[in-house]
Image (cartoon, rainbow over all chains, first blue to last red; front, side, top):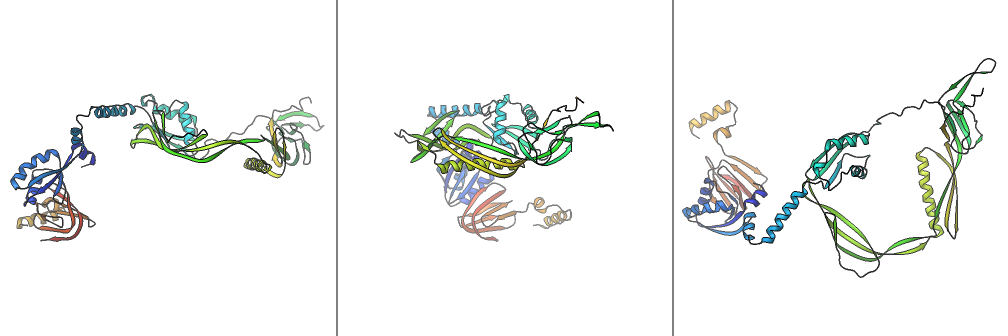
Length: 398
Length: 90
């Protein structure tokens, strides 16, 4: 018998005294009267079976004495005159009933590339969020929407369990489609100013050689190839999609400006701890009072009320720690500016390395004046400067 | 068991049928030394915290130990928990 049944049915703790206890137990079991936890001449039984046992007790000449009562029937009987408690319980049951029509928690399972945050924001854009009525959500439609929007998600299942919306996804590990090669005729021009270091032409007519200095926009590879006859005259212009790697030494200039000072938060060491409760969007902080005129920073450890595994409710609570802090203006020192500059440069270098750009060297400069600090970094790199452009039609006049 | 009972048992064994179900034999399960379950018993003969004596179909079983407690029992089965030290047939 489960604990729930025990609670609903109620139990009476009975003390048994007499010489023929074993006979009493045997007759009770033969009459199908429930007896549990027989220990130290005490046992548990149901209120109904206890009444039946009185005749058995008389027959076997044992004395039964009630030592305690537990369970819902006794609780209700003891509190039968407490009307407010009854109203409160009914209201609680009503709120639970109404809450069960809404979604209060959205969980994602199986997502790796798309984080919970991305998927939550997407669902929010479809008006699917905590607090939405369950009947308004069409799981099949939602599945189709997710599949259509995120092509990397190959399988999706949306289900409503209790007050939870569970989104199961499977992402495609391999590439979904191979990028189609561009076939339309085009030229390659310089995307940046630089000195040509290497020329690898796969398709087209090269217009530059190693050592040339090219300006931005200069033609590097011509996609229009002239077909000449024996006399050297152009008889036909063959337009192709120019394809080449033109590696050049270029310079990247980074400029970062900083104000002379910044506002810094410093905790004073004053701390208040308390409780945080949020019910249906209303937040209550239970914190000790303070007469401080400074600012407070709150750190909350939040949990959501969950009655059963899938029955979440819009009730959040947790411990809250409030730290007092003051704000003051602090001027940057040259060392700090240098550190910021180095961090900025490092981040930029990492981005370039990811693109396969080779970094040859860098040159930095920090200037400070009344308006603020200026960090200037010049990076010398080797990179492919060829970018596609429409065919120039250079030979068309011929 | 009577001679006719033995005959039935032989027939059931020949047919490879479970004899305990067919003949109503007592079944005893013991988990560690803290839990004992008895099925098909007749009655409780003696009950105390240190000794429980139970009438089975053909024999008696004596359970000795400490803090013995009948967790539940009905017409057919009984579960005893506690620190069981001795289990003896009489």
